[in-house]
Length: 145
Ligand code: ATP
Ligand code: MG
Image (cartoon, rainbow, N blue to C red):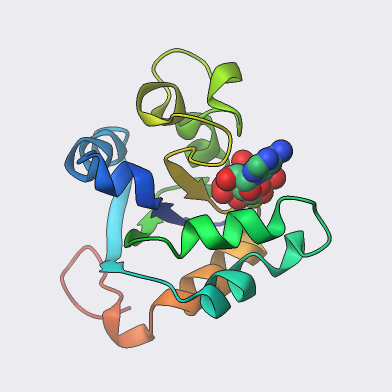
């Protein structure tokens, strides 16, 4: 059981002004922010991040969308972080997401589904390193990881 997950608030949610509300929901649910940054991915960055989906029909559209504006990336820490965060965000398609989940509250469609969440402990570590160096990750006591 790992204790971190990587999230991104996706471009449409950032554009719609939901960054603060989503971060509030995340911290209220008991996640601690280890690292945080707003950035715009290049198309090549998005292609690398979503490489596992390369063969899927929506890969081109997805990577266009993810590089269309800034995202807010964060490393979140909590016991059982990956699974608990996926519960908090809800189903991939917001139409199927449960009431009270981030995707139900802030997403518009399956592509612009408000947030990303890692799907395994292994991918959480890979994705965390994609956005942040060790010098940008802080422990609860304020010191670097
Ligand atoms: P994420 O990885 O972003 O947290 P997820 O794990 O719930 O989402 P994945 O199957 O990994 O879902 O899909 C990655 C992303 O690709 C989705 O979040 C969504 O933005 C997009 N996506 C997935 N399925 C479709 C689809 N059928 N049409 C368009 N976009 C899709
Ligand atoms: Mg996924």
